[in-house]
Image (cartoon, rainbow, N blue to C red; front, side, top):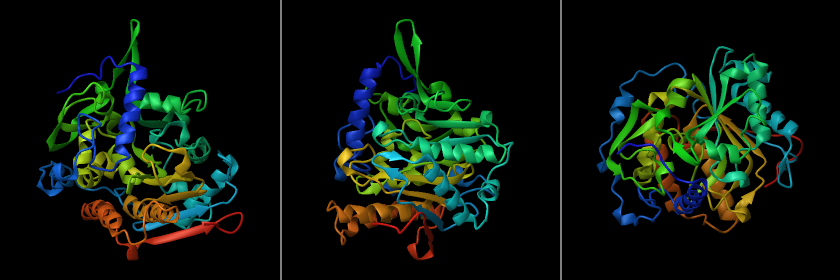
Length: 401
C-alpha cells in the first residue's frame, strides 16, 4: 500500500513518536511493522530465511569512495574534559576536538588538508543528523556548526550544504532552523504542509521509487505508525535526499544505546534513509547492513562523525535524562563498521559500570556482532576487534573515566 502520510495532527504525531520510541527502546526486533506492540522473540523470523533484493545492490560496481573508505579499520577518538559544562557544550572546544579528530584519522598536520581529502567546493554535501530523542539528546549545535564551518573553510558554498533527517518536524523542534543555520538548506523526508485549516503529513513525493530495499515481510498501514513508514508493502524506498540531492554525506550519529545494541553509524543511516522501515526491526541484523550496502549509502557516506559530547547508555534510541552522561568525546572514521564496534565497547563498558549490564553478558556482545559480521561480509568495513586501529587523543588535560 502506498499513500501520503495523510491527516495526522502534530499532537497525535508526537504521541505516536513517544510510543514508538518507548517500543524501540525494548530492543531491535521487538517492534511490529504496524503497531508499537513488542513482538515475542520466538515470533520473529530467522533473518536468513527472509528473501531480500540485496543482490541488486551488490551487483553495482563500487567506487573509489565506497565504504569503508580510505581508512578501513581506523577509528579516531578525541576527548576534552572541558567540552561540556553542566549540559552546555563549548563551541570553541568542540571545533578544536573535531579538527584534532580529522588530523588523527588522516595523519595531516592541518585540519583543512584532512577535510580536503574528502570534499571539494563543487560537492553537494548532506549532513545526516539525528533528532529522534528530541532536545534532550539531539545533535549538539556546537559540533554541527563546527562541521559546517570546516566545510566552508575549504571553499564549499553554503548553498551546497544540506542538513537533513527523516522528519522535518523533529529537526525544527530541535533547533535545526533557518534562524540557527542561515543559508543552509534544512529538509526532512517526512514533512507537514497546511491544506486549508489542517496540517497534512507528506513525504511520498520525497521518495525515490526507483531505488528500494525489498524483503518478504510487508508493512501494513497504521495511522499511528504512518509517519514512520510513508508507505506499506514489501518495499522500503530510499529518500531522494540521498539519491538525488547530495553527492556526499557526513553521517553524524549520537553516542547512544538502543537496548543492548547501539544506534551509531550504520543504524543512523539505515533507518534514516528508508521508508516503511518499522518492519525492519524484524530482521534488524540484515536490514541495517543491507540498506547501507545500497549504492546511495555505500558510495556517498564518506565520513562518520559521532557526536559523543553527551551520550546515553540506557533508554535509547530515545533518551531518558537519568541515563545521559557527558562523555566529552568526538569520534571520526570512514569505516562505519569499525566505528560501531568501538562505540559499542564504549557504551557497553558504561552499562557495566552503571550496573545495567554485566561484564560476562556475552549475549549482548554476540547479538551485536551479528550485524557487524554481516556488514563486513558486504564489504562495508572491518568488524574484527584485533584488526581495528583505535587511535585516541586527550586534549586539555588527562582523560577521565
